[in-house]
Amino acid sequence: MHGIGGRLRGVLVALLLRPDEIMLEIGAGGELLVARLRAVLAAMLLLLPLFNAIGGGSVKETMIGLGGAVFVNVFSQLWLALARRQRRYRWLPFTTAGFDVTATTLVLAALAAQHLPAGLNSLIVWCGYLFAILMTALRSDGRVTLFAGLLALVQYGVLIAAVFAAADSPEELMSSDYGAVTLGSQSQRIVLLAMVTIATSMVVYRMQRLIEMSGTDGLTRLPNRTWLTHRIPRLFDTVRRDGGSLTLALIDLDHFKRINDDYGHRLGDRSLRHLVAVLREQAEPSEWLVRLSGGEFLLVMRKPLGTAFEEVDAIRRTVAERPFEPGRGAEPLWLSFSAGLVTFPQEGGDLSRLLRRADLRLQRAKQSGRNRVVARDI
Image 1 (tube, rainbow, N blue to C red):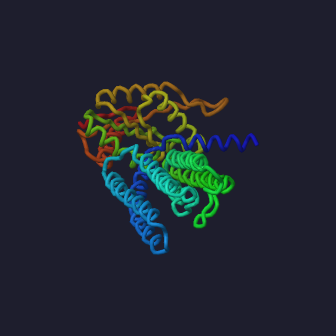
Image 2 (spheres, rainbow, N blue to C red):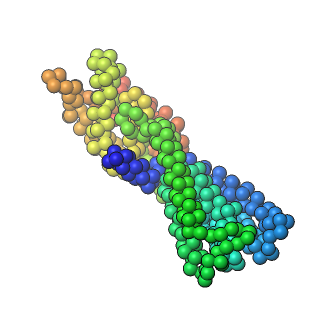
Image 3 (cartoon, helix red, strand yellow):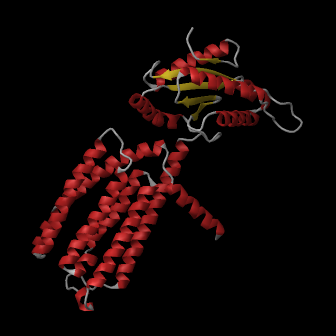
């Protein structure tokens, strides 16, 4: 039981954490998909009042349904326009999910004001909660799913309490069209909302783990090239907007192939983890370290070239001064790295051009004897 409880707590913590850049990028595309889906569903809602009138429904119910459908359609177009913008609004997923839930509650409240049983037993309108919760799975953000689910539970719970409080007698909760409203049936709907929230959260959690695995290097647990290609455009946009420089340091472990050939891949992997430990320790918390391939890494620094050169060169000296201990009784290995630095936007406007230039400087560092940092062309 303790193990299951611990795993459930771990899942909850993971869902409440802010997603990484890959998931946020996918979530932004998911928000646009949700906005388009919402617009289609909102247009289809306009048919429901018509069917209600044709089926002999009351004029008041038809007008309430029509008013709710028009309200949802107007806001659906607003959310679609915001989702199409290139700028990403962090608040938009929460706002639109809250709107989907609250719109359902408002229509149910309007029905209850006209006829109490309709407010709680209108299954078609109540399904709006389920759609609101299920659509959050497309955003790849567990926080949005939990927010929508909890909001639906709270709002519907308040609506249930309000309807039962407004009924002066049990007869007022009975209807030939909607059936009898009972605490048992409403409790079942609350449980169903909770079940849908949990199930959708598990879908999002699974999706997050798969995306995290695709953007993380298995050996070092560092972000990989996939993560970099999603993250770097946002960093570029930030630099363009706020000014300043972004320096990329392409770092390569010297003689990594020789270490693998002489000592085996297992020790080679351990030497990489040793290098990563030193790089993480010496780099600033606001900087990003990415593994590209083999013994090659990229350190992303929000600082000008000169300051970045001093930092990387200091890290190089620290690595050279800390031997890697292969094991008890084994001779220590003295590691070193070579690095090529390049700055954005002064030396390139896209990642591929910057990496090519950094690689040329890295090769020059290796040709000059390794264990050195090159920041400028000769």
